[in-house]
Length: 223
Figure 1 (tube, rainbow, N blue to C red):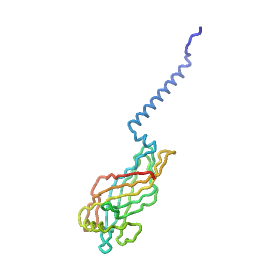
Figure 2 (tube, helix red, strand yellow; figure 1 turned 180 degrees about the horizontal axis):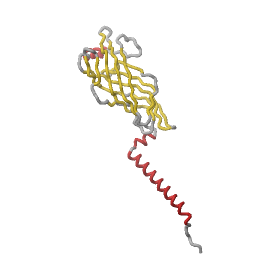
Figure 3 (cartoon, rainbow, N blue to C red; figure 1 turned 30 degrees about the vertical axis):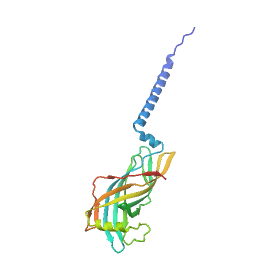
């Protein structure tokens, strides 16, 4: 009767198989731990990446004036902000952006940013700036909203104060690509509300009072 035995030549193969099994178990355990501790990764890979974060770095207004005859407002606003992609794998493409300045939730000036594609890789950030120029003689300008009479009257009173509040809102059209097989078009409506301007009434000039960046609310929908 022949006994069962293993040849010494089989040991290297058995050791290799054992090491591969151990490595596979480690990879599975590590992957499970990562997804458990950071569920946002799984959410991102499943096709639901996070919207970009936006922070206002600077806001200025110059030449703020009110036309009593035309019942209109004229000014030039300068906006500087930083946009960051918070996703670990997805790339964010911003195709087109429109910037707006609001007074008490009423749009008083609009500016279409240059149609230059902005690409943000994973965790990357870039600086964006734009100007909104509202002229008091542009009453019939189709690119600018008609300022309501009550807004004009309120700005008439506020322009003599040392502080005045404006808000910045944007319309952003873009695309998020999570992988070579996953891509979708999105539309975003960033809102940076109630920004207090330290104003010099005699000069019609003012700058943002806060020295720290101000986080904006960025809702995002599939387009």
